[in-house]
Image (cartoon, rainbow, N blue to C red; front, side, top):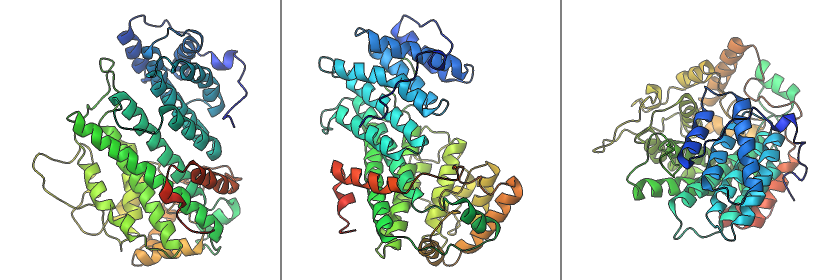
Length: 443
């Protein structure tokens, strides 16, 4: 199965605005970094990426600087152009780099990173099967062993694990969400509780995907910890003068994704009548590591992601905060961490969390669109009855501010088909990459 066997026409749709490519290797990478910035539009960015992709596809002498520059641009373009365009752009250079890897093994890391970006594009199009196929392809390109890997390859592997964790979590979350527009309106406008029961087979699939997401997230966080230790910390920003990609914020992103996966799995385990507490107990340490990350200034996206983590954790532990104050010599809070996320009050200010999410026009993740009664009841029970009052206030405040009951989900009314859960969970089991994900007994 190929993600896309059809290439779009090589006409206007894949041209962009042509740019003059720098000849010096460092200058070319700097040019790519510059084109990622706000001073350059999408068409300029695309124009440079098209030229780089064609050079890699047609010229076997094109070096790692060309591949790295394309990776930098493709990552930014993944959120700016339709997935099919991105796939059409990246497929030819990936094929060429994979072929060259027989004599230039270092090119595999860039081929794998580009395939990871294709996976991101498929995931954003809600094509979870194609997304996981691409992740499998990226893993095959890099191979299974980590021992003796150079730093750049370990960075590529970390990004692949991070993407894998995120897309598997998102796929699993779809199984818990209310995708039917009419039922969503009843939940949001009328304040109805969910009445449907979760199918045991679907719950099994959710748990398989969530376990794999946790394993991938653990690998991503572990590699980041290893990179920080081996190289005495990481820079705040990437530079064209450095051959490496990893920056300090990668640690924040990896830990947040790992916590999201752990909380999802804990919730699914509770729904299955299993003990999810050991997953939850891991959160405070990871949370502390995240807010104490060195050489980092929190962006809005980091703060909102961590707010969702804090809320989900709180609703599984009686309303408590995940933050544990601990004085460690030489460590201090990262810059711009919101004070409500590091308040020393043992109870999380869930009203403030909700307010900050709404103010930033961010959703609450799965928390305000649960489709099934047993999951809703688990959150209500484990939150010491805090969940339902919060949910009613959050929905009222959000609707009153936006006037749009669908602002949280932003999915087409049809939504991704739940059939993808079954297919993707079977793909996870067939890879045998995560033995823990398959050890759930019969369906």
